[in-house]
Amino acid sequence: MLLNPLQKDALTELVNVYVGYAASLLSEMVGLRILLSVPRVELIPEAEMEQGDLPLPEIFSPGHIVSSYISFGQDFRGKAFLVFPVQQAKLLVNACIGEELLLEEGDAVPPRFLDTDFDVLKEISNLILNAVIGEFGNLLETRVVFTVPEVELIDVTESDKRFFLKDGVYILILHTTFTVAEIEVQGVIMIALNLNSVSCLLNKIDTLLEEQDV
Amino acid sequence: MFKLAYLALDKVNQGIIILDKDLKIVFWNAWLEQYTGKSQEGTIGQKLPQLFPNLSRKPCLDAFQGALFHRQSRFLSGALHHCFIAPVEDIRKDVRQNLLVEPLDYDDEKYMLLQISDLTGHYSRVKQLKHMIKEIDSEYEQVRAAEKINRFKAFHDALTGLPNRYLFYDRLDNAISMAQRNKEMLAVVFLDLDGFKEVNDNYGHEAGDHLLQVVAERLRELLRESDTLARLGGDEFLFIFPQIKSEADAATIAKKILTALANPFMFWGREVYLTASIGISLYPKDAKNSRNLINKADLAMYQVKNSGKNDYHFYHSGI
Image (cartoon, rainbow over all chains, first blue to last red; front, side, top):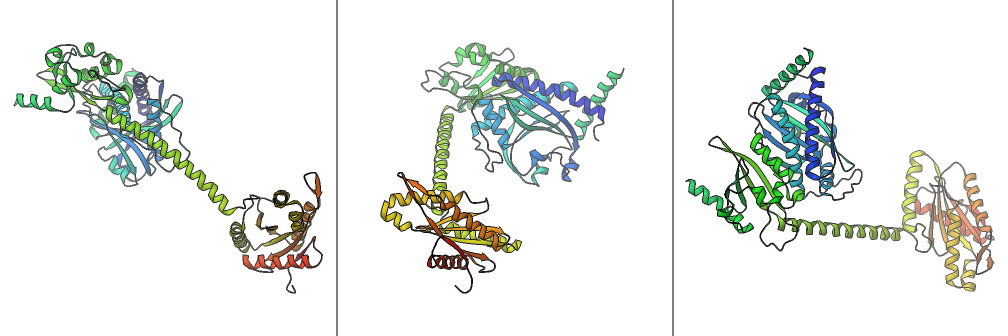
């Protein structure tokens, strides 16, 4: 069940709005102008990911990543992840708390992540994931129950990819770029959804498209 | 049982607040009484943002709204928001608190649960830790810089800055391996200054040292990127010229060296003339290892010394 071009366009547009909303909340919170772009939206069956056919080379290349996730849902159920390579996460945190961080190109040693940094990331991902998932809930007119994010520093190996995403049947991937105080930070929002939730979402998008046609 | 749960919340080592949909305080635990100096009696029924203005900031109001109307749990960190509830007469500067806001439904009424943890001590330790990490980083950089300098000193001549004997042997071994692999020829050139002892005797060691530096500079200018010039000690210098095509190439280089030294050296207003005796050995013709190549270039150099100096000779088996 992949997205047809019309569905993909509609979903991209919706997600752009959601992510824009999340960015404005984040800007208010840290008192800095933050832009969040959504250049690409993909819906991938988990089975394809298991076959190692991953379209996420930068984020999932072996190494350290920082991931935070929330579980949500009743009718619209799944897990949402905000994932950064560790250096990018550190850049984002430091930009938000106004600390300077200079990273050397190809730095092999991951930056030191203190638990206060995890707290900042927890709040950022809480805000972004709540905003995006909340808007999906509004779209589907369903009640979504959220948990507070868990933030983890993971050393990713090939086998971790599957473990990481195991709860979903379909993975909705939103490739994002955060621009905070002129610093660009690459990240990915991933939403692992069960079959029923994906069907709900696609049915809703089809309805929206039909309404547009009328 | 209800009373027991109530008592337990009073014993929790962090601030617990329950708010109703109008943001009025329904529950205020004992930790908060002690922390803020405000009693349960004085706070129950009061609007929380009015008691604590920091909680009327937009991110907090958004979090309250999210919990009440969208059932969203929100975490607000002390790193970004510093303090939500002012502690009583606190002498600590820069109070840091984390706030967790969660929706709470009871009897068809919407409430929310606020959990406040004071992390001021923790943040202060983190600050110290960051400071310590910065110091360690800076010390590490200093050690690295010192190590770099020591490494340079270990393999270079202190007077001229040229590679010393150890680095020369290493470079020559590498050059031989490369020449062997590519089936190429290389030349080792042994240079000994003529009349340097007289300079030392007539003008003193300081002048001699200065002269060696100037000589090194002139010789360095003759090098291609792949060539090596080292000072062996005293007035002896060694060259590696890799990738030469013929003996004639090596002879051309030797002539250039002699010409470079032919111009007078000026110091203290005087012109000093110096010449050099040069011996050359070739890989693979004369020897196939570094020690023998150097020895043979040295023998060739001595032959020049014995036959009038200021010239170059190639090694040959008759020496």
